[in-house]
Amino acid sequence: MKRSEGVLSWDEYFMGLAKLSAMRSKDPNTQVGACIEKKEKKVVGLGYNGMPYGCDDDSYPWEREGGIMNTKYAFVVHAELNAILNSTTSLEGCTLYVSLFPCNECAKAIIQSGIKRVIYESDKYADLENFKASKKMLLDSGVTLQQLPKTINITATLE
Image (cartoon, rainbow, N blue to C red):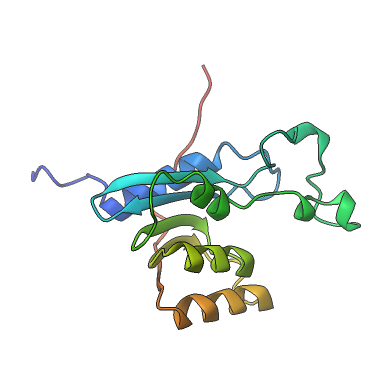
């Protein structure tokens, strides 16, 4: 048996970190994680979808429907933006690994930060207009998009 058999590829490894980060999210419907990797195979940012610092997760709504003040949409910081804001260096030329394809608002931040490659797992909102806009902006700005097959199953157990 080769030593490389059964070893995660770099893409699987960084996606695994993104998925592990997603497990920090308190969102009861959609937990999303992101990992930013520099060309030297170094992690330079991690994030998950959650409330901004100082905003108690239990004091804000997590609902998906209702008035804007009664849903999560006005308050939650997406995983991609959190990873960008948590980064430790310039993101020029970096790769973003994210468990769910980025929305149009995150696409703007990805482009502006200099990230050049987005590897994602799920694209479940591909038919929605804001995700079509996201793809258009990312591709038009020269960001490479690649869907990674769902191969990593991370589960947490408490003993």
